Structure formats: C-alpha cells, structure tokens
Image 1 (cartoon, rainbow over the protein chains, first blue to last red):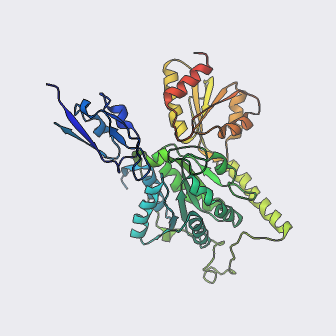
Image 2 (cartoon, rainbow over the protein chains, first blue to last red):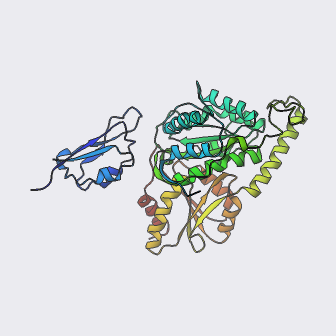
Image 3 (cartoon, chains in turn green, yellow):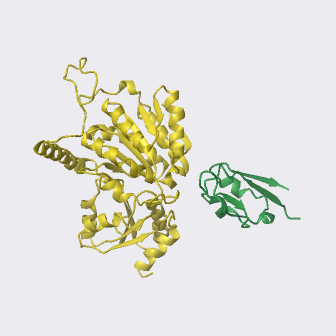
Length: 71
Length: 355
C-alpha cells in the first residue's frame, strides 16, 4: 500500500517563498489566499489527500515552518 | 580567528554585520519586509550596551541618526520603501551637514503602500539623492546574503571616509532569503577614531567647538559648500566605482542587472551558455556612482544590452545614458512584487538573439 502522509504548516513562520510548492512531487501545496499576520501568503495543503510523506517540503523550507507526518 | 559561517536571513546578516562594524547607535521603526533587522538590532545592540531605539516614526529615526552621527558615532537606520521615502528629509539634512550614516532599504513594491514583496522600484529615489537639494548618496546594491553582510560592514567606513551617507539598497527577497554567510571581524567601537568634525570633546582635542548644521543663508557660501561637496563626489566616482562582470568578454548580448535581478540573470546566463549562446552579465555593485564609462567601453566593442529589473525600467535609463546611442539597449522587467524567473529572462534573451 502506498504511504500516506499529512503536512502541517506553521502559518506565522512562513514567509511565502513557495520553495515547498515547487518541491512537492504530488502537488499537495499551494499558496494560501489569506495572508498571515506579517502580510505574507503562506503555503497551504490544498490537496492534503495526495501527501505521500516524502518530506521534500520540510527539507527545503528555510524557515522550519513545515512538519510532515507519516500516517 | 577561525572563519565563522552561519545560516542567516539577509535581514539578520545585515544586522550582525552592522554590529560587527562597530555600529554604536541604531534607530528603527518596524516595516515588513525588514522587520527581522530591527528585531535583531533590538536584541544585539542592547546586549552589547549600545544604543537601540524604536523611534515613533521613520522621520524621528533618521533625525536620531543625524544626532548620533553628529557626535561621530557610527549610526544606522533601516526601513523598507515607504519608510525610506519618509526618511528623505533627514537624508538631505545629513548630506547638507556632511555627516556619515548608513541607511538600509529592504525595498518592497510600490508606489504608495504597495505590497510587501520584493521590488527594485526605488532605483531613481536611491541614485538621484531622493530628497530636496543638490546631493547624492553612495548606493551599494548587494546580490545576496553574503554580499549584504559584506557591503553593510564596509558601508560604515566608506561613509566616514567620504562624509556622505551610504544607502544599502537590498530588496525583500535578499532580506528574507536564508543563505550561508561568512561574518566579518568584529570591531570594538571604543577603538574607532574621534573625528575633528564631530561635536563634543573640543577641549580634549584642542579645537574650537563644532556646530553641525545644514543651514547656510549666504548664497555664495552655500554655493561654495555645494561645490566642495561635488568635488568630493568627483573623487568618489574615480575611487569607489565597483561592478562585477561574468562572461562579458566574448558576449554578444550582455545582461545589465543589480541585486536580485542579477542573481536571476546569472541563472539565465547559464541556461543560454549551455545552449551555446554568447551571453554575459554586467552587475553594478555601486549604483551611485554608476559605471557609465565601462558600459560605454562595452558598447564600443559592439555588444548589445538587455537590462533586467524588478521595476518598469529605471536603471535602463542610466544604461542608455552610458552607451549614448552607440549600442541597442533592451529592457525586461517585472514589477508589483513579482520576481522574474530565469526561464523568463532566458526566453527574452533567446527572442532577442533570434534563437
């Protein structure tokens, strides 16, 4: 069975650089349409069910804003 | 001392470089995307027993810099585009009083409040003085975190040497980006010289008291002061001019870009070279003084220029002035906080070269 995962984004740590969006092989992530308190548009799991817990997004995040869980 | 490498945000690296340069007083006011810089200074300046004040406004902060600099202390402020507009009055006064200062602009998109994403729309403001009256400030444009640290560190001594404020023109991307940075040697402010032009210490230094001011109501005297300052500008143009060239010698088309745009253009250059296209990159490090003469030299060698900016086209005017009609100058720009991708810039140069 394929590995399922889930991704959690700390909206306030995220500066919206979108590196994780590029790094995700299954296109789980997109930019939020609501800004955080800094005014940045953080990453958001727009297709959460596609997460395979590969951890690419977590690995590229320069601001340690992402946690990935293996389900 | 062993080389110290840290992973830092651009804003924090600028702050650490200023602390290490012996910055004695920092005055700031929060604005995104440079907030981490003010926060960093709050923590580290106070911890070192130096001056940190969060002013009530940007105008107050720049006038505090004026006061601190009048005493001969290394003083600094930072902001982002709308805040730097507010500081222009104070910058003009600093120039009028021949005071050194370091001002950091982590630029964002405009006009007006604009957005908080990176932009290079402050080029005109930065390189033409920005405020009222006949003056220029020295403008240094870093292309990344290492460069931001190095140039900020150096900005203090450059500013003192010429008694001209130095503007470090970064942008929101450089401020927010995290990269490895080798930090410079710390300087103890107590070891820095006392200046003859500063206020205070007149008895110890055996000179009459100084009155630091930018006012002069006698036209002939003011003209003479301005001419004296412009003679210094002439020297700065000879001695301070800096630029970086990458694969320019055999290039047919040369990108002209600074800061973030230069990083993106370098990526496009590598894509073009991989396809055998003769593309080069010319990156001014000092935006004022601007390297007009070198660009003219390249124009006379038959090169074409593609100016890449995160604006509607500002530095491109200086490139046209430099080449003086001797070479075609093209422009590619994005604005509003959008950053061109290297693919986009490559596509533009490929179109120009008919590939």
